[in-house]
Image (tube, rainbow, N blue to C red; front, side, top):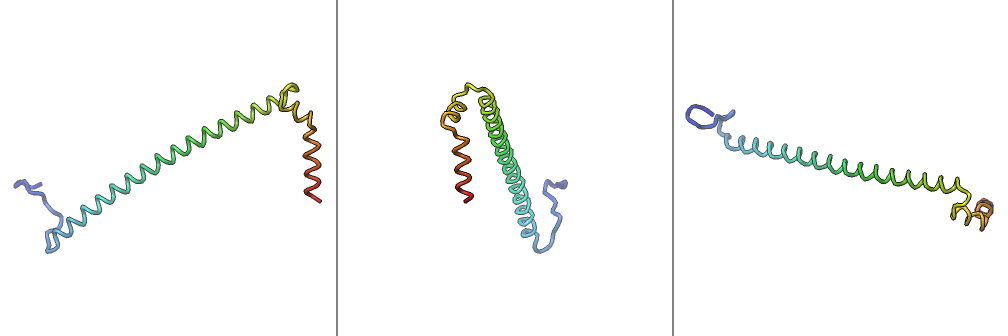
Length: 98
């Protein structure tokens, strides 16, 4: 601002008003783009957190299955042995390859 309290413009030609209006539009657009970028980053962070949670759940499930398989008295393992699942799977695989 100058001494009169009026703002100084960088351009004082015949298209002064248009120039200032365009500058304001550019600044508004710049702020919109910054906000959109920040919002996108927040969404990506949320997706990464959800993915990490899912990976942890899957890893825990794998460990639980491995632990159950290591115990001979596990119901799922007994059921597989009782119905001879490995042999059935082997026969299915052989049938599919024929």
